[in-house]
Structures are given as C-alpha cells and as structure tokens.
Image (cartoon, rainbow, N blue to C red; front, side, top):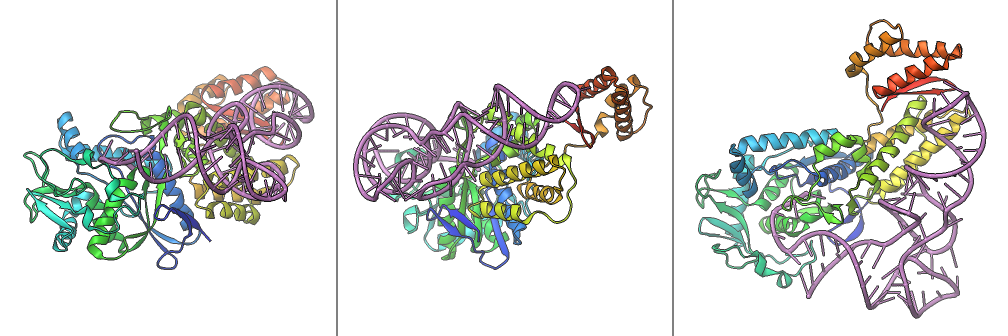
Length: 466
RNA sequence: GGCGACGUGGCCGAGUGGUUAGGCGCGGCUCUGCAAAAGCCGUCACACCGGUUCGAUUCCGGUCGUCGCCUCCA
C-alpha cells in the first residue's frame, strides 16, 4: 500500500489511482528563460524517482511535463540578448534536457509546449468567461478570484487575508486586485496569437490547466511541482480547471522542498543560484542525484560543498560493492521488501537508501567471508535502478590515447583500450609475483594519473575509473 | 501582518511514546608486500521551559531560533 502526502488536505493518504493500474502524472516544468539551477535538478529527480517507483510497483504511468516557452521574462531576455524568443527557447530547452538526462531523469512521455496549445487555452478561457468566472478588460482577460468558492483550499489561504496591495499592477484594469491574468493583450513587437479578445498571449497558469486536461483527462491522479508553486500557480490552476469543468482537477498534489544556499532559497530573480550544468560538471550527475535522494523529497535541503563531497563518498561505496561480485539468482526478497516498506511511505528515499546501504554492508560481509552474495548484489542493482542511481563507472574508450602512453612505458603493445588495460594488469601481476614492488607500484601510480584506480584483492586485481 | 514547515550526535539526514536508522568524517583494530577496498569496535544525539504519562527526542502548551509562501520562481 503506497501512501502519499497530499498538499491538498495536508495529510498522508493511501494512493489509489483513479483507474486501477494506471497513473496520470503532471509535473510543472520550467519556464525556459535561463539555464537550469540546482533547484530544477532536485525537483526533476524527486518526481523521476516517484515515477520510476510507481512503474516498478507495476503501475503504468503516463508522465507529462510542460515547457513554458512564452512569458514576460523570456521576451525580455531574448530582447536583451538580441535573439528571437524561439532561439532562446530552443537553446534553454536543450540545456534543461541535457542536464536532466545527466541526472538520470527519464524523458517525459509528453512534453507539451505552451505555444503549441494556444487554441486549447483560448477554448478554456472562453468557457470561463461564459460562466462569468472571467472577464475581458482592455485586451486582457482576468479570472474573478472571489467568484470561485474553493479558492485558497490548496494553499490554506483565505482570500481576505492575502496581501492584496502588492498584487496591483499599475495601469491594469482589474475589477479586483486578486484577479489574475488568463490572457494578456500584446504590446508591439511581442509574440502574439489571434484570439476573440484581440492579439495576445496566454497567462502563465492557463497552460497547465489546458495541457494537463488534454493529455491526461480530468480528473487525473498526480499533480506535482516545487513547493514555491503552491501559491499562486497551483491555486490558480485549480480555480481555472475546476471553474471551467465543475469537477475535480487533480487528486494528489505533491510538492518538493526547496534547495537552499547559505540558508536562503535559490532564486532566479535574485541571481542567488547554483548553475545545474556547472554542478554536474564538478561532481557528476549521479553524485548530485544521490545528494538529492539522501533527504526526503519534501524537506528543504542545504546545498554545500561538504554535503556533495559526502554524497560522492557514498556513491563510491555503492559502486565499490557493485564491482566486487556478480549478481546471481533472483534479488534478495527481504531486502526488496524493506525497500518497498520505506518507499511506500511517501517515497522516503532517505530510508530507502538506508536499506540500500545496509544491503551493501551485508553483501560485503558475505564476500569477506567467502560466501555467496549474488542475490544481495542483484537486489542492490535493482534498487539502484529504481532510484535511478547509475552504479557503472564507464568504459575506457576515451582514455585510449592516454593508456597508449602508459602501455609504451611498460612494453605493452598498441591495441584497444581494454586490451592494453588487460596487458598492463598482467604485467603488473607478473611484477608482483617477482616481488618487483617498484614496477608494480609505478604501473599503479601511472594509471592513477589518468584516473584509473587499481585495487588488489584475494580474487584478482580490479580497476575502475575514478 | 497572515499562512505553513522545521530545529536530531563532529557534519548530512531519517524516524519513533519505552528497543541499532543510514551515510560521511575522525580514532583504533583485522585483512594486506604497500596502497585501496572491505569488516569489526568506539565517537550513543534529539533547541529551551512547562504539562500529560509508569516512561517523551517522539503527544500538548509556551519561549527562542531558522526557513518557505503571501510578487516571477522547481
């Protein structure tokens, strides 16, 4: 039995998909205005793990993540760079995709872009105006917040206690400062689409309402995103979708915790960010992923050098065990059961990792005692797969030239990287048997120079890339 | 000002009314040509003050502190 913490109601609930065996999942994707930061990475990993886990538990998951490719900031940034919004959007979208893949995040089943769903949004806005829940005003269209009864249910806010003053944009003709834009009339030079209200572009929230309904139907099971989206974004989505349909929008609302830096939330607008691509370059995708997974997805986490170094050491421990033996037979069921218990509890990856590390210790102990650990290893590999943690350490192909140089030093002929590696290890073993420690250590040191680590053990010499 | 989350051992980070989370680090030991890896032992904590209870880190109240949202934001 899987339980999830539902922001709507703020309780732990049993997870039961609307249609048995099938899950519809919508995750709010990025506004592709500037390259991804660490926070985007965390959110992506959090929901990727949930998706993988649900699939592993036998559910068929349809995973939709939108791309917001039109908004004020995209327009402003493109102008600033003197490029078209299309060029900017394409460039940034690719960066997101690349970084996400490096983190081991599976591609969405559907990745709808807002600009390709304008007719659907216009249709939705139309229905809202028909019902009196929205009104046109000077080329814009606004949602009447006070007209929608359930407003505030998700975020726990009451309409009257919102800080209304801050929300008034000068020169905008709203009936009520709380009202938010569904459609914005175009200013000259901006990307725009024809509509019953004139040329313009959609407001931010409406795309999610339109696209989630299109690709998942209503209601759907899981709607997810960063905790900073709860208000107003998700609240507004609910108002739009439920206002138009009269029925339920999404059943379970999941929100990941923020990534902090120096005690403060990362934020685009303040420039207080850690670039995701840079962090991946510095630590690697799997290290970052493990860092994210160590904490429960709802807890805020603190990005720090120490925490990342810590995660790197932990990953090395997992990989080191994966290198030791061969998996054999089926995975150890008891280990898997404990993992399931951990993850069924609101996808508690922190405890799940605890199970994984305990299994590693058990496996290592068995191997140390000359016992079989194949089923433990199989379980470890399976869990790592579900968590999306890559335990492989990569091939040697890109090191062929460097290896050739080392090979020459010890009279090993040219060949493929693997062949040269094999020959070098054979040479070293011969040196060790001849008690020629100087040569043996020199080979090890030279390989270490090109980031290939040598470890001697009772059952032979292993190597891996650092 | 309103709403919400949280304060755990050297660090990160789960969790629980009475029993070992886990990882990293540090010290010691075993194994080992050395190194590494691995195993074992040690480092046994729950902001503060009250209350409930046979018993609270875990429940209730208060204090202090940190963070998030209320504005674009994963």
